[in-house]
Image (cartoon, rainbow, N blue to C red; front, side, top):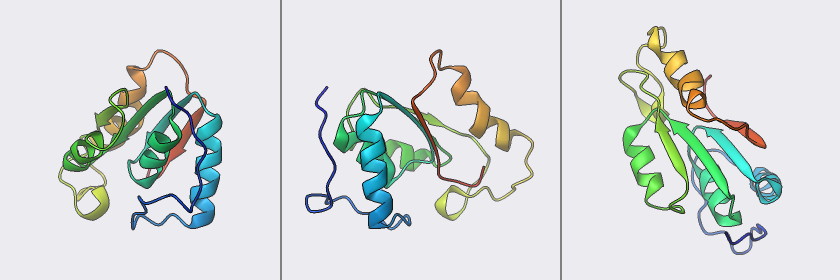
Length: 127
């Protein structure tokens, strides 16, 4: 797996998810050092993980279309889970935040399938 440093001058995958350049640099530095990353919420941070060549990556999101779109833009060894939290609105927010399956499906279910711990856990979302 090819590892590389992160720098803003060559970064072309900025999204509108809210990361600042300082955030990007910090994530790039942390992810470059990590051998494994688990992300709650896919987005630009996922693309940064791909860019720096994280060897073991797993992420979850509540928007099945976003999971599919992201999967097509990163390395084939990246694994993804879809967190079924019911019907969603903008940015994957559940329309019914009190639906009993919401938190379990998103927080715990994906980690039950992972036998080894991760170096980094990133939480970008409401839980």
